[in-house]
Structures are given as structure tokens and as C-alpha cells.
Length: 167
Image 1: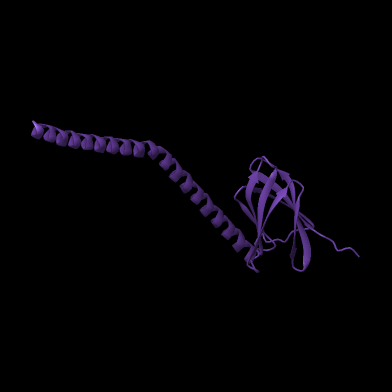
Image 2 (image 1 turned 30 degrees about the horizontal axis):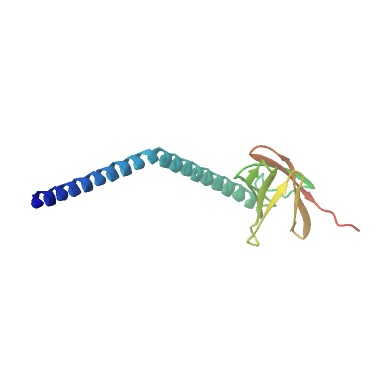
């Protein structure tokens, strides 16, 4: 009788371990299957973002080549030059020596994050600006201001203005 109880406990323990193993296997597999659509959506979004960045780089390279070869878009800002940008896009200014990028629009705070990339100097300047705010910088020994003219949901309008020295 003691032998039967010992053998019975052994079988129950083995059955319990198999049952725990099956529960773990099916719960793991179910969790993996449940997360698959979310993972695929994230991969698709990352792929689209990479493609958008690739297209933006190609557009900027083409614009930079036009500026360097003296094409029609090679221009320095006039006393008042207007630029419109969407989030994540850039514009090349000052004959390809300055790249203006709109990094982020924060609609709740009515502010944007802009970045100026001074290509010749290898210098980046990033700053949060509100509507009507300005970012002062120097180019060609002259003082300029980048002014946020208007903010929309995912874009902004800028004016590049030369600052006159007071006599």
C-alpha cells in the first residue's frame, strides 16, 4: 500500500509538471500570436519612416547639387524670404550652406523645434520656438533672424530676415 501511494504521487507529480508545461507553452504561443499584429504595424511604420527619410535625403541632395551648380534654386535669402516646412522636412538656404529643418510641432504648447545646420562650420543649432519667436544667427558676417510666421497642425511658415545694425 505504501508502494502504491508513492507511485501515485510520482504519477501525479509528472502529470502536474506536464500540465504546467502545456499551459506555459500555449500561453507563450498565444501571447506571441497576439503581439504579432502590433509588431507588424510597428515594423511597417518604421519602414515608412525610413522611406520618407530616404526620399527627403534625395530631395536635399538634389537641391544642394542645384545650389552648387548655380541652378535656379541657388539663392541667398532676400531681406524677407519665406519658407514653408512640414514636420521632418528641410530647406536648403544661403546657396547650400545652411539647412533649416522642422523637427517637431508641439500643438498643445503652440511651439516647434527647429534645427539650423551650418554645413561649412559643421555646427548644429536646435531651439524651441513659439509663434512669432525668432532664432538669431550669423551668416557671411551679417546678422539674420529666423522668425516663425505661422504654425499649423504639422507645418510651419518661416521668414528669414536680415537684421540691420543700428548706427
